[in-house]
Amino acid sequence: MLQAFFIILQRDLILAVRHRAELMNPVLFFVLVVVLFPLGIGAEATILERIAPGIIWVAALLAALLSLDRIFRTDMEDGSLEQMLISAQPMSLLILAKIIAHWLITGLPVVIAGPLLALFLGLSVEGIETLFITLLLGTPILSAIGSVGVALTVGLRRGGVILSLLVLPLYVPVLIFASQAVDAAAAGFQPAAAIGMLSALLLLSLSLTPWAASAALKMSVS
Amino acid sequence: MIMRFIYQLGSPPYFYALSGRLLPWLTGICLILFATGLYGGLVLAPADYQQGDSFRIIYIHVPAAWMSMFVYMVMAFSGAMALIWRIKIAEIILINSAHIGAVFTFLALVTGSIWGKPMWGTWWVWDARLTSELLLLFLYLGVLALYSAIDDKRKAARAVAILALVGVVNIPIIHYSVEWWSTLHQGPTITKFDAPSIDTRMLIPLLLMAVAHKFLYAIVVLLRARNDLLWRERRSQWVANLFKGGS
Image (cartoon, rainbow over all chains, first blue to last red; front, side, top):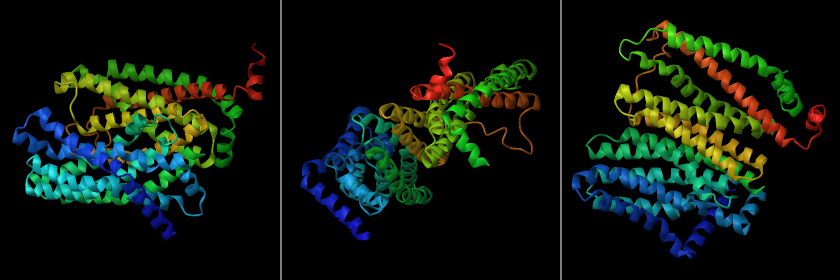
């Protein structure tokens, strides 16, 4: 059982590395969205510092949303998803592996790029530290919740818009807690409460969403 | 006993007949409730000492806001029934509730904003309850969009049922996260059971209106479900029998 988990994880990572150009797309998108904000709002340092956590987190949400489709779409198209569903392994475990793989491929680059961009936006050192922690805790939640949304829409031809309608409202708590934590840290307060909530959300989403996603996949594939 | 009732309810002809018998009663009670509630609320209740007569919009606003959450609970419940027992009626109730729930949510938002203009001096504030109501509207719209995107309607109903269950787990999380985020809304005036901070003459019409809205929802959902049911079962024998006399 655990072996199947690691096989899926390894397979998804290998597949991602073989498509190196695609690997860069989400993080490039993330950087671009963040760069657009100073251009649109103006480069006033105080404003930028104030809105930096929100901008970076919204951009992270959008980057995650953009890349969600790949969790199941290609597997659906080449039929390997069906093989996973009819295999003797518990589907929720395989989905957990796919969520983690998706996070390693698309979330981790954002976790690394986020603090760098925050530096460009003039966030304080405390803020940047907290931003890193929230990104580390928060981006896996995005992949986990997103897996349910993708599982529900993977059978549709034009699932993209619907996917964003399904997933973005569910992302709101992550956005709120994460940007609150960074705001608090940047203002010199303890961000521990919001970070604790984020950790709770992470555990909750990692333990519940594979289950919901597997039910949704069984529906989508049948 | 209860299980038998549920299984009976799951049979389309039985449901159709039962709802047909219930509807006149429901309509009657609903009309009475609306009449007394509106009379009590608009005529008998005293004007608020601060808000004057414009507080009277709560007789639509508050019941609509309550209904928006109540209907989501109904959706999640019938979603669970649809997933566990594959009951067709539950699927139909689920999706038709989503339409009504979205309308109630929209109504709550619109009336709230009409009330907010004279009271807060602005059409919209990013207040916790307004925002979570707005997010609830998006959840409803997501349900509707997903349902209409899947062609096979039985499959669509299962997808929507899963989504409704995921949503119902998330609603408290969303609600409290938004609550933390900011709040300006006046505190709840009715849930404090020991000493409600609202005049009884204002409260009773409000409760009447709340029940009236529940009946209204029941009527509309039954009407829609009956229509939907007839359309889905249009090739079956019992529907043919139903219309043999008429045509």
